[in-house]
Length: 219
Length: 219
DNA sequence: ATTACTATAGTGCGAGTAA
DNA sequence: TTTACTCGCACTATAGTAA
Image 1: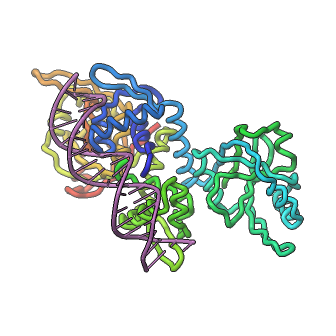
Image 2 (image 1 turned 90 degrees about the vertical axis):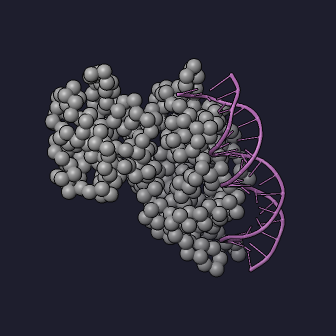
């Protein structure tokens, strides 16, 4: 796979480089990965360049440890697996606030949608959505939502216009109750739309570019 | 990384192909993986060829599901992560019995080793080892042992010969208490040596080529 | 022993495109 | 719309070897 370095990183972690420096020769990493010593050496160099591992080079060998960034990478992948095999827990999706074109407001204000939101989400949404551009690292988590059930909001036709089926996921954003809304027939996107009972931007003092975390409990 | 297909497989799992057929276009998989539609198509073909996914081709698209073998692969990788981040659980290492050269017996029968085994493992080992060739898929699990602490057995010098430090891991083999013994200064190997209070071969009716499972609890 | 350079062989990518 | 072929190019592997 293109640009995948987590496999090598995971093997280094298994070899003890997760929490402290470990003596790891390139030959040994190569054996563990099933590649040559030379390829393993280059891999280590690349990981160091990407600041995923830190190196200490001695006269006869090197010591390696996985950086904070590397640990984050591995933890995220672990979380993906955990959600697959132990579907109980919470998704923590990170992203940055940005301004949309105001379509969200138009959709939310549709009475047929609004009625269902109020009934099924147990709160009446403020007429507008908060647009969040999901961090690329969290895209697989966001995608699990795309492929999960959620709370179904039925589509309808109004004045010749079709409003499609939508699904919702209750969650929290910066400590406030909210819901992530996703069109059922959606294309691949990194835009997450969040609604709440209040105007999130003013309530949470959010501006474009602010980093936010949305927590969605999964069963 | 060379020959790594678990990333694509994991993404397919997230998209719902883990437990049932899911409609997944090559374009969408490509978007999810950050590669082109063509590359994703090739990847799917390769996964199907490796019997990690099963395909159903329709007139306008395909349905995919992950096979038993694919699930095993993902579960194993999940287990590796789990051991990294939640170091409580058990390693289950699989392999096949084979005949060594009888060196095991020579080592175990050394009084200085034997005394320590009896004292630290709480059982007197039968004078011989069971050689197990670890399945390649379980090598990362076996490696976690190589890089773990274990019960330390001190080396010594006897009649001009050096007997190195050895570490042990208590476990179970087919329901019988045993210990995996690993030289501290070991080279990369897929040979796991197991000792127990009895002759495992006769006690468990094992022959060369038999598949066995060794369970090692980790804290 | 190591790490890691250079040269070469091989694999995998995306673009274009057929079906 | 799909899937998936060929082709040209770039990336990545290993072998040989220096330090």
